[in-house]
Image (cartoon, rainbow, N blue to C red; front, side):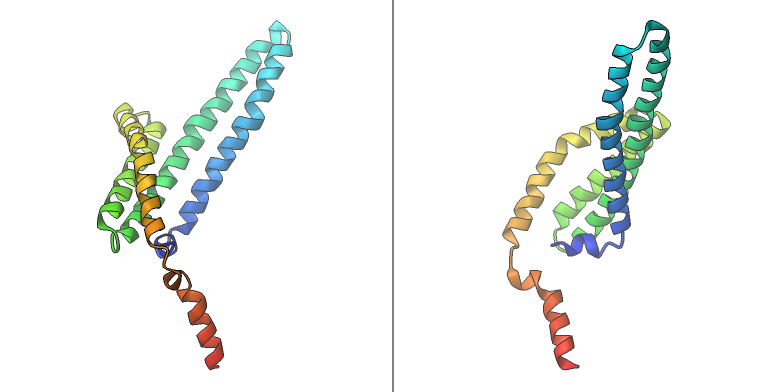
Length: 161
């Protein structure tokens, strides 16, 4: 089952997607609350500057990093969906459609194209059902022999030499 991720050759996209998402979450969790506290404690003369900084950081987090995350995630889902289609045509096709919508959402955010943003946002409504479907497929394919093919092959190789 995990060969869908490994065989696509786009694991770097998946890791980049996770890294950008984690960076955005860290900035939201660490930077924004500190700026809110600084605003509340600052004199009125400094609050305007803090407000401008807050808006800039918010744009960087939600527009720039969010769009980059969506672009990378969309590309990753497209690759995983293509690999899935060999075994599970329906699930792979839906995964590629979600990847395309997620990529479109990122492009829409980056270029400020509202229809692409709306289409991508609608795709987020499908995501929980896709995750349940994927979970059921993984749950039903828990064959231990399939999960240990690579280590068994490696052990046979070293035993033969």
